[in-house]
Structure formats: structure tokens, C-alpha cells
Image 1: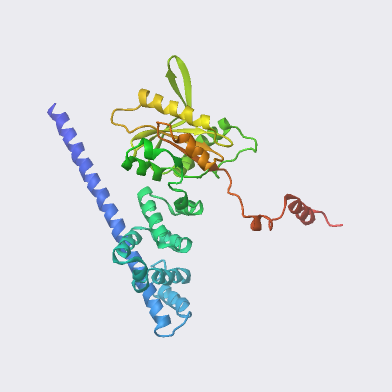
Image 2: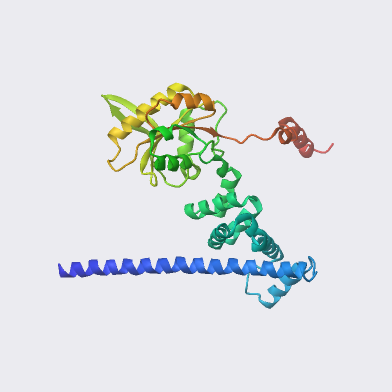
Length: 355
């Protein structure tokens, strides 16, 4: 017994040591990244001063890059391209120009976010997002969700900021103020499922199976906190069988979320069915410490006013959002693209045998 206690004590000590090492590694990584970002900012300022105060012009960048590489060949990250990014970085966050637009407190908040993000993320945000408030939002979401640079790029491309909190809901009437705000910001409208490959006349079951097949991308689109419970999840109510399209549990909201997939337009009867499902999950699955179950109806199109009327007297919290499989192109771009017939003609010319 004493030997067992000694072993358990050692294991607990080992876990404490490992946790301390991991924390130190995280701090060291953050410290190194913070120092590198600060250095890039300072170098950007040096280049800016040389160009503007000493009239050295653009030629300073290739010369500086070449000399740094020759003098410090073991140090990476000082290509001509990266030096240009450093210059742009300084111009973007130069306190003399930024402080007027942001104010001192917001500037400090921006600085803290910048120092935590990898350089590649900072470059991407600097190039893609010009509005400072929106850029800060993406910074916070990136740090909270642990997005890679590629995932961040996808989120920007899909206009995630504009889609947050746009779902049509009855949360103000069915949830507490705090929970209502949290759930609203969790849901989106529309959801973008451009990672799916579906035939034109797909059915709802096919959509459901494809989403599960691409569950990792689906979860990224849903957002942080969604934990997959099951598809066609079975419920028995009064000796009758019912099946939920998709069932999730949200770790932050502490509640079940039912997703009902619909092809075509939203119809009022969908809300009545979802109201029933939410009641059943609350009775059969919900733990006493859980929040009320949330229903999310995903359809291809919805009339917002029509949806609002439908949800007005529903007593369970339900959101209605659209989903898109392929982003539609603007007409001016679409009209300039070659048709399939044009492409076939060009291919036949290119690969036809010589006479």
C-alpha cells in the first residue's frame, strides 16, 4: 500500500513538473514572438526614417537586405520582400498616425494583440483588413480559437465578421440577457459550406452525410465550442421514434444545440417541429446544470420578416440561418468568364493534331 501511495505521489509530482515545463515553453514562445514582432516594427521605422527623413528612396531596401544576409547568413527573415512588409507594418501601426484614430487605450489593446500573433498572421491581416476595429476582432478570434494562418485566411475570405450574430432568432424572448447575447454571437448567417461537393438536385440526407464526411471543416465553420454528439440522433417520446438531423453540445454555452437541415425556403412548420425537438432534448438529455437547448434551422433561403413572425410565439430558443454551398460571383465578373463551350473550343484547338 505504501509503495502504491509513493508511486501515485511521484506521478502527481511528474504531472506538476510537466505542466510547469509546458507553461514555461508557452511563455518562452510568446516572449520570443513578441521580441521578434517588436524588432520588425523597429526595423520598419528605421527604413521609414531613411526614406522620408534622409531621402534615401526605395533602393535602401534591396541594399539593406543584401548586406544583412551577407553579414548575418545564419539569420533568416530579412529578404527584400520581408523588409517591405516591415516597412508597411510600421506605417500601419505608427503611433503618431494610429493614436488619433484609435485613442490610447485601444492602441494599447491593438499592440498586445499584435505581439501575440505570429508574423504571418500579422501580414495577412494587414493586407486583407483595413478597418482597425474589424482587424482587432479577427486578432482576438484567432487567439481564442487557435486559428492557423490558412484558417484565418478562410475566415476572412468568408466574411466571418459580417456573418456573426445575423441569424434570425427569438433569443431575446426565450433566454436571459447574458445567454441571449452569447448565443447570438455564436450563430452566423449565412453558413458557408463551399467545402462540399453536391449534385444540383441533392436531398437533405445527402447534405447531412457530406457535412459529417467533412466534419473537421464543418466544425471550423460552426465555430469554437461545438462538440459533435451524433447524426440522426434517436429520441423516444411516448413510444414513438424521432431522429434529430445533427446534435451538438456547446462547451462554452453549456447546452445542446440541435441542427435541422432543410433544402429550399424556410417554412413555418419547421419551427414547430424544432420546438418539439428542443422540449424533448431538455427532458431526456439535458443535465440540471445545462442551459436550455438551442434549435438552429439551416435552410437555403428565408424571408427575414416571415421568419420573425414564425418565431414570435415559439417558447423554445430557435435560430434560423441560411447556408450557401457556392458563393455567387458578381455579374460583371461572371459575364467576363469564358463559358464551357469557349473552353472546349480552345482545348480542341490546342490539342488537335497538325494537318
